[in-house]
Image (cartoon, rainbow, N blue to C red; front, side):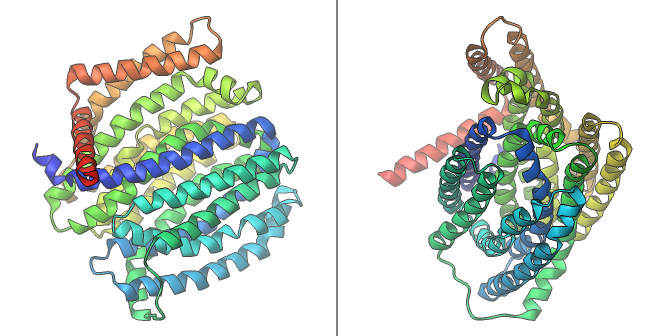
Length: 489
């Protein structure tokens, strides 16, 4: 098929699989640790960390977005570009941490929790570490060496797992979570620095930095709007409701988010550099966008349907009865995140075409809609706020895809038609999983039965209907294995 070749073929899939393996491996370990810690710690302690994370996440936007993407997108980025961004990042992150250090008492006063001052100041060190990691990540992404991410991320996650669980068992409470997050970020960065050959040179150019900022500041502002919108819900829940309410909402978001973040991050990090190289060939960028939407939805849809339909026995078995109030949130977030591949692929195409100005305009429009929905529901209930994210996700699909009807001649209607077979197969699978949930079986037997049945039904439908995404993934995996065998020989 023509579009398969146009979409980048085996090299793209190979890098995607390395990135996906890194994300799944690291997030799998992280999820396992979260489940163990959730059994040891109380929802209240998770709620405290969630309050602090709101502010750290916002500060990290100033480091993780903008210049990193600009380095990847720029066709002829060289040593001077990377070194200039590195030294700027280091200085900028120290300033950011200083601001965070100073406002920590104000944050503690806002929530009426004095202990947040020290927690925020210690956990906020992530901002400084992230400044170094960001440039190395850009180098790896630009050079398509995602194998290095695998070892760095997995090493940090495993080390953090040991520290977090050990401290929780010894009664450190919320500080076990602080140590886990901080150690993870530090170890990731150190391993990445050792495995990547690039080192910053003693050179700096304001002219180069200015050129990168002219592209990157729009993406930075876009990411800031997105993050403030996402974290505003957490901030409002923490202020208007209770820390437990925030913990249940966050825990319900965790499982679908783990899947979404892993698949999306894998696609995002591989797709942007590949699309950027082909930015002058509209047909090729369109083919890549289409392939990314179809393939990622094929992977995402059954997972979202499966988690939503098997949510109650899963939470009861893994997290215990005390976390059951998070199940309704889990189902809402599964529905909201189901169509994230459409968001990611469309936005990557816009960034790759060099239209960061258009990207920013879209973000302003989407966040205006999203914030309006949050303000309209914040006094109703936490569930009403969760439902507002579902409505916002549906509206944002249309907004994100709208520019590509002209840029790529790829309309939203065409995108929905492309993913329809995957959605129908996943819906049938979900109905089967939900039906099995009514069997009078213990959770330890019911959940594995639902998982096995879900995989069998979805695979069976894919084979019977000769699903295009299934056939494509199968062919790419065969090529990947064949190349691996040839290399070993």
